[in-house]
Structure formats: C-alpha cells, structure tokens
Figure (cartoon, rainbow, N blue to C red):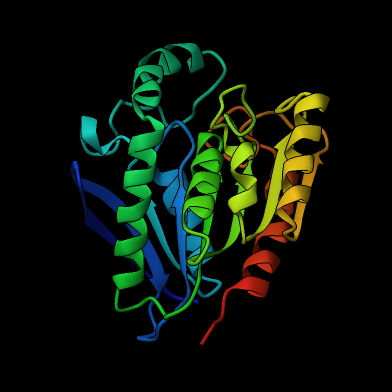
Length: 251
C-alpha cells in the first residue's frame, strides 16, 4: 500500500515536539497508532517501521522523546550501532533518559494522543500504542493513563517495565483496559520480574500475552544494531498486526 510521510511539530506544555508520521496515501481515514522509539530515538530505522506499519492501514506517529534537548537526532548516531560503540552512545543518552521523568512522560502522552486523534487522516475510535525498549514502558504508562482511548498496547524488548519503584509501569496494570502483548528478549526480565508482570496483567483482567522470543538479545527488532534478529522481527509483526487488527476499527 503506498504511504505518505510527514515531519510534524506536536504542541506540548513544554514546547514543540518534532515527530515523524506515516499513513496510507489513499485519501481515507485510518486508525491511529502512537509509536514510541527505543532509547536511540527517532532515526531511519524507526521511520522504516512506521512506514511498514502504515502500509497495513494505520496512521503512525513517532515522536521525538528528547525534543526538550533539540530536534531528532539529538545525538549523532552511526549508521550501524554495534557493540563497540554502544557504551559511548549510552553515556550520552542516559542523562536524557533520566531527565524524562514520569511527569514529563504523562504530559507528553496527553499531547501526543490529542495531536494524533485530531489529524484529519485518523479515523474516530480507539488507538494503539506501541513501544520498543524504554518506549514499552512509555506505552504502558500511556495506555493506563488513557484507558478510554487506548485499545491495544504492545512492547518489544522492554526496558524499565518492571522496577522497584512504587509507580513502576507494571504496577499500573489495574488501570489497563487495552489488550496487551509484550515480546521480550532472553534476559530482559528475571523470572521473578516476569512473574510480577504476568500477575499484574492477570489482576487487570485484560486479554494479554507475554512471550520470550527464543535466542534473542535486547534490541532484536532493530536492524541498525548488533542485536538484530530477522526471525524475531518477523515474530514481532506476527504478534503486533493481529493485535491491532482485533482491537482497532478500520474503514
């Protein structure tokens, strides 16, 4: 399906967040999906994922999480993020991640959803929220803060999803109404943390699946990193597309 792409500015309480959008170029309305990037942020890899998802009939919005520090890319990234450069990159990224407090996350989520649902190409009705790495935690916070709007939530190789913090995203599960899927790499969560996540989702009473994708390491969906696993990327699409198809109404 032919897609159209745009670079947009999302008004927020703290300024303008630059964002990438992709949607079918057919002059029709389509369900909205908010896509939170991994810690490396908006870059060609995330734009490609948005285009692919848009080709299945969705309007996909990818915000720059670090817009308070500048437009994407906020730090210079190599074309391929190998294990040899990851420590230096994370040394630059961690101050940005740590500055992205829960209060900021929730304020931004309000702005992103307001903007997404106001776009003329987005159909009325519920939206989906998905995230990669730390974006999975943001997706969970967004879905639990907006249970009347979010019908599907998915996270892949999640980070910061189960923590010791009183407001850890998994502890918010009782507020969840969306159907959920979390696809984890081996080692993303300890068995105890995985059990905590499942128990929280059980308590929420929503449809959900959690799955460890075999033979994977953290970051397996990202083809511009050393963690990339083509089979696991396909498994991610095999889980994500049916989830969105079940929960979001297409025209």
